[in-house]
Amino acid sequence: MIGLAILLLIVGIVLLLLGIFIGAAKFLLWIGIIILIIAVIVGIIRLVRRSV
Image (cartoon, rainbow, N blue to C red; front, side, top):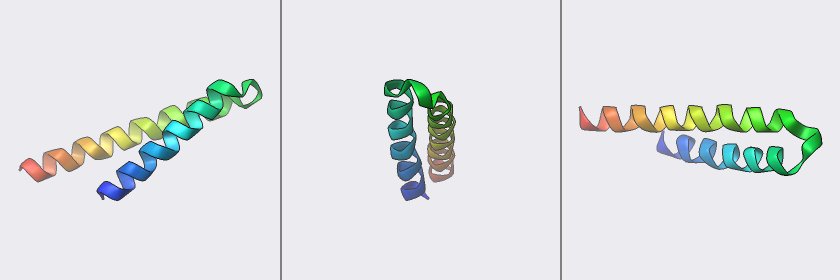
């Protein structure tokens, strides 16, 4: 589960950077943001489950 969160985080950062640097691919910026949010949520759920 934590591997999935790390993978999503890396993919999100890459897409975010591509979206910033390539003006024609603005949708990558939004996809990167969404994937980063999902990765953060998965990480938080992992922390909560571990502490319970």
